[in-house]
Image 1 (cartoon, rainbow, N blue to C red):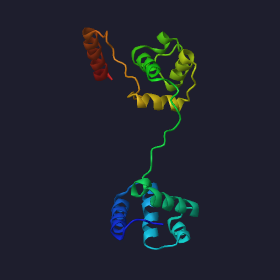
Image 2 (image 1 turned 180 degrees about the vertical axis):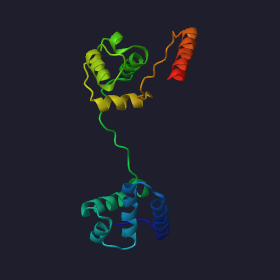
Image 3 (image 1 turned 120 degrees about the vertical axis):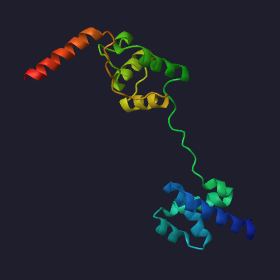
Image 4 (image 1 turned 180 degrees about the horizontal axis):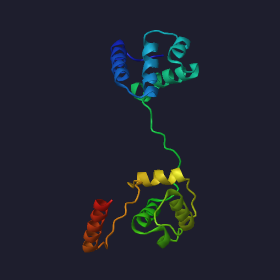
Length: 175
């Protein structure tokens, strides 16, 4: 039995109406709309048909609302799977990728890090397997981004460069 007064129900109705109109997430909006339609007197079966959701879901939303109120309608973040590496362990691959080449880290004779190479390194160091996408997600969560390497010639001789440019200009004029 509903123990809310008429004033509380009207207040909840308008809160739901405002929340529904401003909601961008479809799943959250359907929760609000389910209760709005229920408060407007629609039968549960018709609510399910209107919103294209199972009848059981309509019953669940209404039961949660009746038991716990407006706040029970909000989606809760799902925790997901536990992390494969501890916080301390996560720092080591990041440090290695940032400061050492794969060859120096013993991950192969490559010049640049890739997700598969990082997976190999983590498997060797910690005995934990990651998918390539999982490794990319780990690095993204820790603030790293994938970029293609750019090569610079640190030891270039400015005199030889000037000489090369002049030779190129001569060749262009003669062609």
